[in-house]
Length: 541
Image 1 (tube, rainbow, N blue to C red):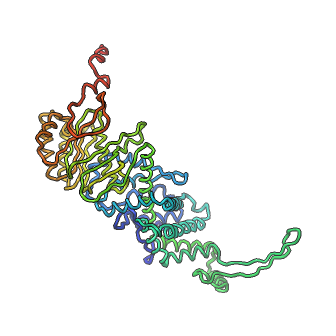
Image 2 (image 1 turned 90 degrees about the horizontal axis):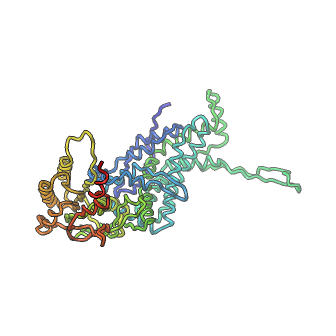
Image 3 (image 1 turned 120 degrees about the vertical axis):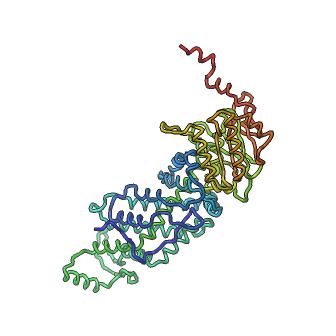
C-alpha cells in the first residue's frame, strides 16, 4: 500500500477562513498535510506531526526582522505563559511555536491589525459568540485528536473511526455556517467560507454517505403486548428506504450485483464495501480539511490573547486595543511589563507621553530604577499592539511601525572575538543597515562598554544617525553629564528626556518624569546591596 494520499482533481476547495490576515493566505504546506491526513486515516501514528506542520507555517513576511527583537524580548517565554488554555474547565495546550511565530511576524498593514482587534472586541462584547468560538475550538481539537489516534489499524473497527472523522468534519463545517452568520467582525469569514463547502458536490456526497450509514431505511413495527407485559405479536408494518440518497440502490439490483461479484470470483462483505466508499469520500474531501488545521492556530491566537488579558486583570492591571489612527506620538497609560506577570510582586504601571512624533527619548536614573523594564514594556506594547492583540497598557496610542530594533540583553560566550563595545558597535551597524523610516529603536545603556570620553562620541554619532531615519527611539544612558549637556544644547530637534522618579528615601517609584537624573545614586545602590568599605573590610582575612 502506498504511503502517499492524493486528492482527486475535482476535490472541493474551501475558501481559506483566515482570521489573521486581511488578505486570506494558506500558510501551511497543503501537499504534506494531505499526505499526513491520509496516513492518519490509514491508522498511522502521527505523533506531533500535525503540530509540527502548523508550527512550520510560512506566514506573510513583513518588514519586521525578528533577529532584532525576539531574543531580547523573550518572546518564547511569553508564548509559554499564555499557551495553557482553559475552556469549559478542560485544559488545552496551544501550539507555542505557532503563537511565537505570529508574534514575531508583526503585520505592517493597518487593515490586518484592525481586523484582529475587531475579532477580539466582538469576542469581549458578545459572550454568546465567545462561547460559540470556544465550542468551535473544542470541536477542531477533537478532530485533530481523532487524526492523532495511534495504532487503531488492525485492532479496532477502522470504518467506525473513519466515519467518526467524517462526522466531525461535517459537524465543524455545519457549526461554522450556523454559529457565525451573525458575526460582524472577521469571524464572519468562518460562515462565508463554510457555505462554499456546503454548496459543493463533495459535501453533498459526504452528507449522503453519513445519512445512508446512519439509516439506510426506516422500518415501522407494530408490536402487540399481553396483560402480563410479554410480546404477543410483532408485525412489520412498513419499510421505507431513502431512495433520494445517491448511495441507494433497489434491492433487486443489490442482489444482482452481489451475485455478479461472487460469480466473478470477488467475495467481500457490505462492511468492506462501506470502507471503500468512506475512503473515497475522504479522499475527495481532504483538501477542504487542510485550512481547518491552520484555523486551529488562528483560534489559539485569540484565546491566548484573552488569556493574557485575564492574567493581567488578575494582577490588578488593565490591557487595551491600541489606537493606530494617524501618525501620532506614543501615548501610553498604565504601561506595564508583561514578562513580570508571573513574578510574586505585580508590576508597577507607569505612563509615557512623547511630546512629538519620531522623537528620541533619553532615559536616565539609578540602577534598579526600572529603566530596562521600561524599555521592555515599550517594545512589548509595540509588538502586541501592532499584532492586533492586547497592548500591556490601560490606554495606548501608537504609530504603525515598519520595524523594531531592541538591544537589551548581552550574552557572553567563551569564543567571542570582540569585546562588549565591539559587539555593540557591530549591532549598531546592522541596525542602521536594515532600519527603515518609521521604525522603533530601543537601546539600553548605549556605549556602556567603554570609557565615557570615547563612549559619548559614538553616542552622539548614533543620535545624529537616528535623526536621519526618523524613528521613535528610547535610549537609556549612564552618561549623566553628557545627557545634561544634550538637554542644554540639543544636537537634534526631536530630543526628549525622562528620568526615574524617586521617593523621599531616594528609592525608585518606577515612574518617569521629564528631565535628566541628577545622580545615578551609585553609593546608595552599593549600600543597599551591602557593598561598603565598613562591611566588607571585616571579611578580609
